[in-house]
Image 1 (cartoon, rainbow, N blue to C red):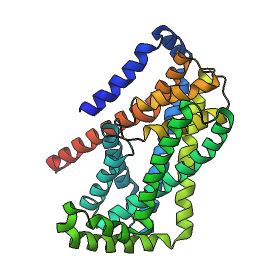
Image 2: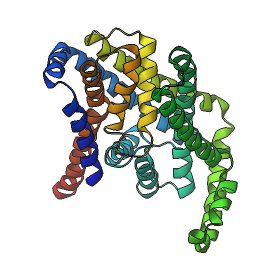
Image 3: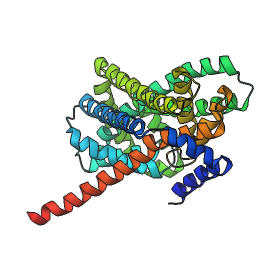
Image 4: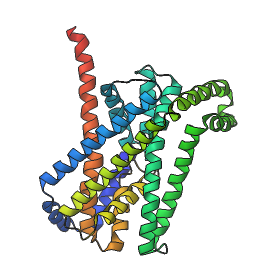
Length: 323
């Protein structure tokens, strides 16, 4: 509970240094229809992510109903919102639910998580590298922005290397893990798990068309993030092109993935302000954009996932009662 409060406190600190009256003025410029359109795009994003998970299940030979995948992802989204970034807590939750409630083995559950995560991070890293070449070519690497971006990219590349290692060489990665003193007692279980995971992933990786499908869906998901950001920036009359807004949005998410605060709360808003400064966006205007975009991509998803899980839990309790 302390981490979410720390994230909210970080946002409050940003508001403290900004002009509240100007933020209120800029917020009044954002029509309710703009927020609704952005939330609809977020719903479409959620659908695409769930479709990607279904394809991941099919790749390992598991035809899981989309409704059940939605439940797992909603539970994961809720956990992601209250745990530090890089979505580690959410992914562990998804793997656990796939194993405990969907009847998958540990190897199959982790294989699904690994495939989806690898496709998403690989696409995101590629987009950020292309964007960074463009951004640093215009604004240089000498400022604080360049330093922060390079450090964040290095962290993201490390995460990508670990995920790809889990996908393409799970047995070697887990063999290294078995050398640690704390896990030596579980060596036999981990070795058996590595073999199961390797078998599931090999079954999926030979299906090249499906692997390309994962990448394509990831590109669509990240493209919608840029569209939501530009829709909000257009409503605020920011003097910035679609390319500028898209690149800065991706960079802000990249910085927010460093595991400091739950869901990148506070670090995302601060990063967006930090990166909008070189293109001449005023503090209040930039913070307003970050807050509205964060509502759509974080708070809206958090409320939606919490409501879904509450209704689902209540329905599960009521159905046996009426039977």
